[in-house]
Figure 1 (tube, rainbow, N blue to C red):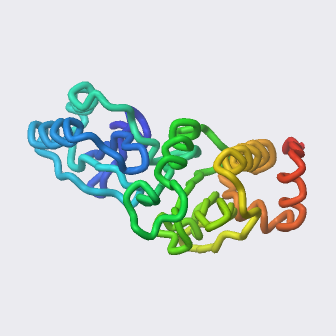
Figure 2: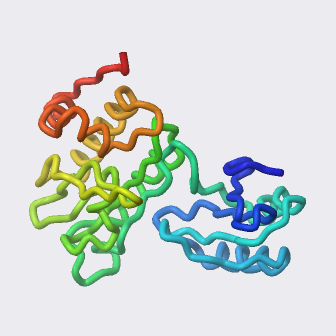
Length: 225
């Protein structure tokens, strides 16, 4: 029996069937990819489920079909589980939405290309919202970027789950380039300092937000020792 994450699978409730979720960066998918996903689902009698990470999961697959499913999909695997950057969620932003203030989709795609699947001490999620409405749920992401009139606001330490935590404002009025640079500093600091399975918010709570803020904004990197 395959284990969670092996060959990109997620074990289902019956402990006998599997789901796979190809990588769909920021929920943007081409028509030909949708047709291919639908064809593969029909071929292997799978159910399609739109996930909260804006991916399309094929659910109810048999173990013996997994290799062929991935070969037929011909798409990269989504990092749906594991200690890594699982998803970068982005709203339509100024690309499509009349309320968009900043280009969240463009920035989200850049972050997805750079960070999706990166191994880290704990699971890690990013969100990019083009306006304060925060349709990408940036207030409960490990790192959230929110488009404001003067640039990007960067939030840190949010998460959902059994012990939900709202994110805290780390910086504001940043250009897209400055926001990306700060995201990298946050991730590198977290990678160097977090304990195994520790979320960013839990690490911030333990060390204190002001200490974390000073360390990250100064570019300080400390190891776990």
